[in-house]
Image 1: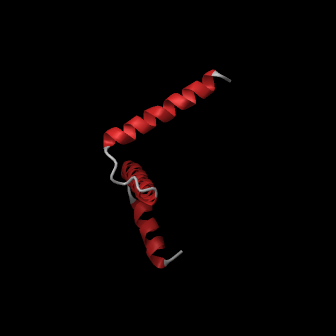
Image 2 (image 1 turned 135 degrees about the horizontal axis):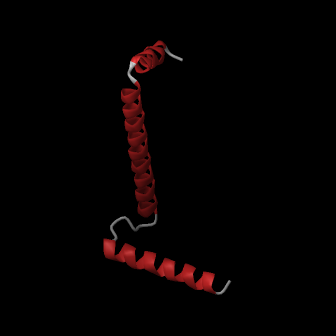
Length: 78
């Protein structure tokens, strides 16, 4: 570990338990937001590759509904 990480860990360990919990919850929230941003970026890249980046929300929702219906029909037959 780098000295900065060690110093940070020492500061965190010195916090009271409630502050440590709040900090961990905040880190979890930030990591979740970062993950969503990453997924959004990858999805936009995929849509751009497929030439669908400028689709309207209505068009996307219609396609998703069609996929849902296809899956439901497939599941009904099995």
